[in-house]
Image (cartoon, rainbow, N blue to C red; front, side):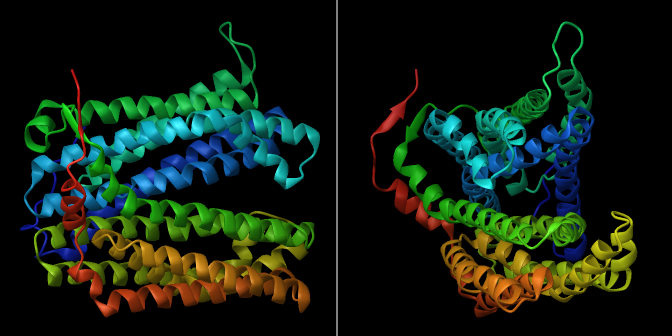
Length: 470
């Protein structure tokens, strides 16, 4: 199921083609994960309204918790890509094992708190029946977060060596496994009682575990062990984890706080009325079609920039970054045009309420306005991650979220009485400023002299006591 990693030498003649070949499997992988969530939603609609709402709240709670750890572990992509570019192939596997060791450490912190974390759904103030379903679903999904972390480790390793198709194939297979398993555990049968929301959670975690087993099978394959030293290390140096944490934790914090910010934004919109909330949710769902490829291009930028910097080719890294930004702007610019022209008909496909359609049409105009800047921000962030420059983007994202996004959304939406459209004006200003700030950081070019390999060497130089396995 594995694909042969592309080499740096073959990348230059068709740079745009290489970016697309790296990015499209990430899009399909993300789509498979979206379909898994959609399957839970569709089946819950046949169970009860309370279960439907509970699964949605439980999923948000679990992912907000998981995003901190998973975001931090995606930094494996950066380290592996730079080692790969430097020709240090046998240092790639140990990086992934360091990530798996961090998974164990993160799990030891998270799992004892799973019950308390699942109770965060009560923050939404949902009715008792919804809250009960949400807590049971969230608890199981939080317990399953270590599976997601292991997936992130191996997937990031494969992306770092330029193989995005293997994770795609496994994600699609996982999605296929999830559907019958979901149906069986939700509605019962073959001696298993109907588990409702808990069944949906068990099905998702089990399907993800199947995916991790398949990923580990690829990771531990003889050819991988030979070329990338993916066999279990016999010696561990705890100090080698420090560079991963130093570069990775800002990514995790960014992911988590951005999720919290958008959740608070949606919570504020919910106070503006039923129709504005419905229109808001319609536009957010449709935006997945737009930003999912943008995120994929961001991941491709991380890999390509990391590989070029590892090969001591900063100008090649810059060319890769610029090409990826241009592709992101081209795609999301077309999506913005589609939102501008077809916003009304798209909204009518989700709702027959004239008021909801009218509000959604205005929101689609704002979404169209920020598409180019959203593309710039996402891909620029991927470029900076490829260089290991993660702290500055975290500080900017958090700072702008709490000084521009949320305050302006409240000011325009509530204080000035512009309603949900005003709140989205605040979101638009935030996305535009964030995109320009990220682009300015990229154009300044300081990232071209960065290397996580130097920090890794410095971390390893501390000569911490190694852990020797029997």
